[in-house]
Image 1: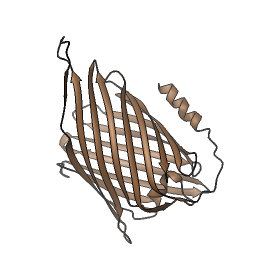
Image 2: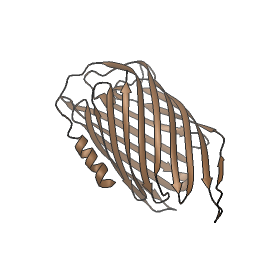
Image 3: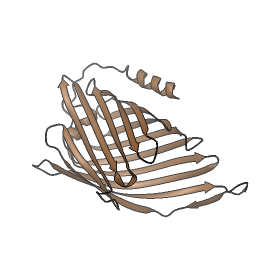
Image 4: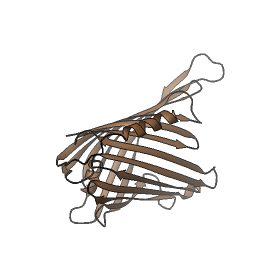
Length: 275
């Protein structure tokens, strides 16, 4: 699977890189993704399906910007709905997880500040066996909700820095710092980098993820990332990913990514429609 997905990403990179003048707006975005992964902890076909719809408070102007980063660079406030389903298997046992959520991100006018909030609900169904019993045990949980909040700043053009806060998690026990920067390089070329750091003090572990993207044109980009987790209680964990995104038109795109870590590997295919 590793070779096949890597080949698909390289093949996708052969799309036309010729510059093209783009100028338009959109206010609604619908994104769907399908992913599969192999894990040391699970067996069989493990997959996840995600569907997200986003409505921006004002039309997002894409003129002279990488299409993938237009909302980010325009600091566009938005409202989103999310649905997700994941299926995990382990030696005949099966578990499905369901998630539904709503989120909002708001950039305070005439300031460097932005805020966000998210409320999600999770539910699980399961099927497993004890010993040699022939009849499986089935069940499900109730929907359980949780919330998170975001506080951030955008001090200069193309840069956002923020922290996320979670229900029932004290900052003294766990905190995080995230940053993303997109820099035009002239013509249609641009470069983007994102850094995420987490300090799980209660678990005596921390993690760092760095991801970078190069935009050959406003429509096409290729990127890669690396992540590292350090822990006093568990083995250190390293992960890698490679990804690409191509806009066939100003309003439709396809994404493909492959990830590999010490304990699992997987791929993801996604598509976006804007209007």
